[in-house]
Length: 359
Image (cartoon, rainbow, N blue to C red):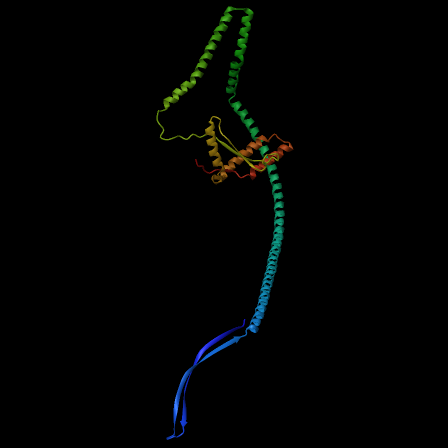
């Protein structure tokens, strides 16, 4: 934008002028000094239109350059982001591809090794099962032979004991015969004679005998009835009326059972069912308390310990004896299969016992 500026000032001036004058009488020269101020007013007109035009053009050029720079920066940022995404995607896909390939190769190698080991284990299992079946068959055959031998020994022992104490056995049989048979026969004969002969003496004898027997029966009943009182008196004679310093623990038998639901028709197949059996003479509240404490003890896996070798051997002998005694006379295929299955389940089971409990 054009503008003008006015400046005002006073310019001082001074000086000395020498002059000569002709001789009128006597000629000569002299000097004169002067000074003063001259007012000065200056007006300056400045034309800025060409400069303003060039500034406007420069601003427009700078704005276009700024827009270009901003657009280029945005495009460059977008290109950098896109390139970074592509590079990252390529790196991630390549990394996971390499890992996936490596894992697939390792899985294939492990699968081959497991299948080979599984085949070997299955072959060994079949061999062990065959050997086990052979051993069980041999054991059953030997056991049945020894059971028959022991039965023969028992019979022979019975015969020898009977022969040694034959008189005692004979006397026992005779006494039993007289007590159990002859008394009834005598009573029947006496009744028949009394009815046929209608003899008062026989009737009196019968009544007397019956009276004596009734007295004997009443005496026996009296002794039996008063037996408990006598026992109580004897027991009380040994007891002292003393107070116990502390409560005496009383133990009762409790059974805690646990079973798996293997029936396909069960409400919850595969679940574990637990049940506690407590004697009926306990009250309802006592049964609840005992059942709660029993479940807490049985469910605590930390107090269960494996059976000792001696305990396990004793249980194994008793189990084998009971199963052999039960299946000795059972020869059908189903019964033998049940017998073998029971033996297999028992031998493959892990028996535990309570190592301790907390009240």
